[in-house]
Amino acid sequence: MSVGEEVRTDQDRPQQSLGTAAARNLATTTKSVPQMQEISSRWLLRTLPWVDVQGGTYRVNRRLTYAVGDGRITFVKTGDQVEVIPNELGELPALRSYADEEVLAELARRCRQREVAPGEVIADFGHRTDEVYLLAHGRVEKIGTGPYGDDAVLQVLADGAYFGDQALLDPDAIWEYTVRAHTATTVLVLSRQDFQQVAERSDSLRAHLEGLRSIPRQRTNKYGEKEVELAAGHSGEPDIPHTFVDYEPRPREYELSIAQTVLRIHTRVADLYNQPMNQTEQQLRLTVEALKERQEHELVNNPQFGLLSNCEYDQRIQPHDGAPSPDDMDELLSRRRGTKLFLAHPRAIAAFGRELNKRGLVPETIDIGGNRIPTWRGVPIYPCNKIPISEARTTSIIAMRTGESEQGVIGLRQSGIPDEIEPSLSVRFMGINEQAIIKYLVTAYYSAAVLVPDALGVLENVEIGRWG
Image 1 (cartoon, rainbow, N blue to C red):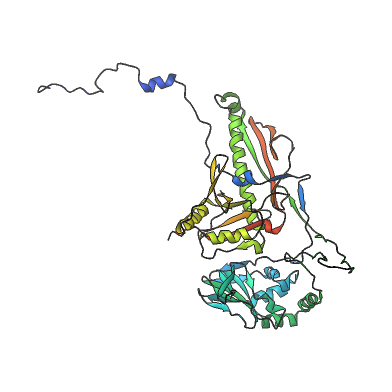
Image 2 (image 1 turned 180 degrees about the horizontal axis):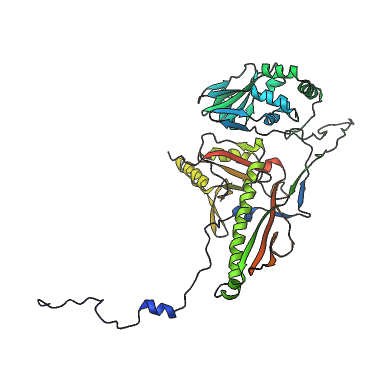
């Protein structure tokens, strides 16, 4: 290029062909259907056996059980002060079915708060039991003597548990194990002396305690059910015992829960903008997906029928070291026969994987519908993001035996409802209003039932933030 010659850029050159921007006006655009981040795998809905119910109610009949009311105690916290809710004292065996609120409130006021440091012994084996402890926060270990003379952890207790309750009824009771704090712990302590002072001034409480002592002790099996009298291994002509199987007089009934919404679509949109995708169909599809997500959330978290709320206290265990270890998963498996599946938050599955890596273990996987699902002892571990994670970064792992024939956990629904598009899910036309808006009522009916207590177990307070 010689000196003084003008430099021409692409912008200065005349256009020689049709530009892409103009050409796009004549082209057909390929579109995706509307996408939705909320959609998850919903393994619980896919793996839970569903049972059709009539009349919207499912009754669970069980054998009569005498071991009732073995639940957890709830507390309220104001600043650094913790108080027990008076009615929650009814969870103690000595106060079950006792309903005098004034007396319970007096007992609650006599509970003294105590802070316990990690490693501190709260109760020592062999000493007299003269106090009942209500565990407001933290974790403690019940320690006994193993078969070879060394210490053995019998049980790990966490928030809401209690121990030493035998002191309220038996003045000669002694501690049959040692209780030691595993973490910083807050307990409320009610002494036998305070309990007796309240009982001396309360006719109703004194009568209640006398009634407990006068009730003949029923022979029960290890599950608390009335024992069936049998004879075995005899010879000759002995008298054969007579027996019968008693049932619960007031069995639990599960009513179908409901999730609903009203979908609104303008008639102009429904009439004109249907190519290449039908607007009504896409609106309904996304609405149904959101409804199913809420349905699974309720099956896990609903306080009436949700899995986390309906797990019995003796089927809840605590991890021995916070993070979910293979030992904890084995303990969870050992609590029931025929465990069909685990449910865990994806972060809990990752935390369990880290513990396996530390031990050099590789979990097996199985193919389910083209998905590789990790297993433990052959039981699949399904991800479920509906299981909550607390502010302390702890969560739960659920283990279930499923199926009506297996006395497990089942889902409940009612098929054949009007305008049904799937079993127990309907889309009902509600008409067009004065603003030319079409309305559809979208409804899902569902619930879940635990047929026997050991069908469902939970590993609670699982730490998911430990990386070391």
